[in-house]
Amino acid sequence: MASLTVRQLDDKVKRLLRLRAARHGRSMEDEIRIILGQAAQATGRAALETINPPAPAADQQPAPRTIDRHDGRRRVLLIVGGGIAAYKSLDLIRRLQDRGATVRCVLTRAAQEFVTPLAAGALAGGEAFTNLFDPKSEFDVGHIRLARDTDLVIVAPATADLMAKMAGGHADDLASAVLLATDKPILIAPAMNPMMWSHRATQRNLAQLIDDGVVMVGPNAGEMAERGEAGTGRMAEPTEIAAAAMTLLDNAAGEHPLSGQRIVITSGPTHEPIDPVRYIANRSSGKQGHAIAAAAAAAGAEVVLVSGPVNVPDPVGVRVIKVESARQMLEAVEQALPADCAVFAAAVADWRVADAKREKIKKTKGGTPALSLVENPDILATIAQRKSGRPRLVIGFAAETENLVPNAQDKLKRKGCDWIIANDVSPEGGVMGGDTNKVHIVTTRGVESWPPQSKDDVARALVGRIAASLAGELK
Ligand code: CTP
Image 1 (cartoon, rainbow, N blue to C red):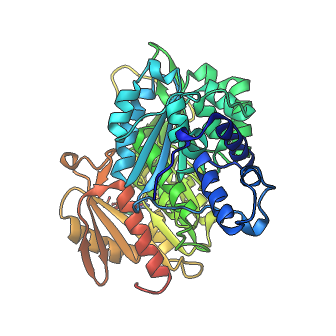
Image 2 (image 1 turned 180 degrees about the horizontal axis):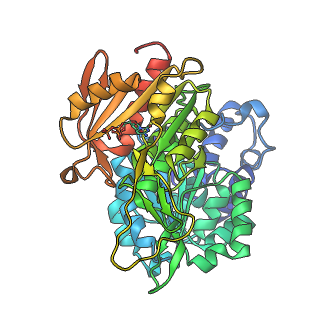
């Protein structure tokens, strides 16, 4: 059969076709397919009628689009906005590919001041799109097709200007036209100067976008590209954006093995005050606990995440309760019950200062203050040993620097939980604060050692286990 491209059509037909495709919200190629289908069915109709027919009846409308995997891979359209964080979006392409996604890129005009279409296209493995009015790409792919032939649209960095355009429904360039034309979930990773972020206009636009169903990851707090500037406005890290993207894709794919289950998760360190300005803390980043919360939410669970002070963003679709001390964490966990499952991933301080001072401790000549410590409540043991209202599945972590598995087996018994996820936190392993983890699942039935993998992958695998256990497939 001869192949036909839109480019080969004459101008008048192209114009009619474009109008008709826009009216139906389809790409020109999809519109041609529908026209040809209808023409085949209604052979007696005149050619002109097939070019401009009444809108198809409801039963002729194409079926609503679900996730349609392309070679079994998820498809992401990455829109790169114009900000210094655009260089991180090149890494984001790789991080998405690592997670099995194919990536297409659109660069705004401002983005091209920071990264080139050549670099983005080379990493993505295909042309990067830049121009709404480029006849070649518009007829070959077209902005409607870019908007629809994807499972998720990510805007990273989402600049103040791009957010304003999205909130206002503008469509004067390829990025904004695609964002207006898409029927797929949109994830934005804002990045801008802290003053621009906190400006009422930006916050107004953000509220509108959230109301429109757009999901946000970040921005994080920290140093800005401009010297001496700090505050909230740094783009989330590529791994964080990729994790949020996977959550959204899982949600959209409708794979919800934890649907109807409630899960309480603790994460991060605790801070135990010494005085109003000093505290005892530890090196936990919260990455593993937060990744479990994100994966559980993606699997359809109702998730309450009780988090100590961390610098990682709140996971998508999770209720987050922020606490500082071990005692506050225990209280928040108890309030969040009942639950089907509880996962205790927090690195809770074992001790707190017996008499934390209300005023700042001052230096005195010839003496250093002595801190006397008292033991904190053991949150995991308290919940695992509850007589009533104990979650069906209680999971603890064991952070060890030596005798990993024997210590974890001992903890399993001592604390009364069902599983212990043991991980080696010696400094050489780089687990504390790092992005990878090597864990052993310790239960009364034995020990299973998982290979080293990203904390997101550990989280997804663990959530799979939890789902199987709650479904009665394993204990
Ligand atoms: N845990 C807790 N409350 C505490 C201490 C620990 O809920 N006060 C939980 C942690 O969240 C983790 C598990 O208990 O799930 C084990 O934590 P870990 O720090 O490895 O063990 P500890 O009980 O503190 O024992 P040790 O410090 O002797 O290794």
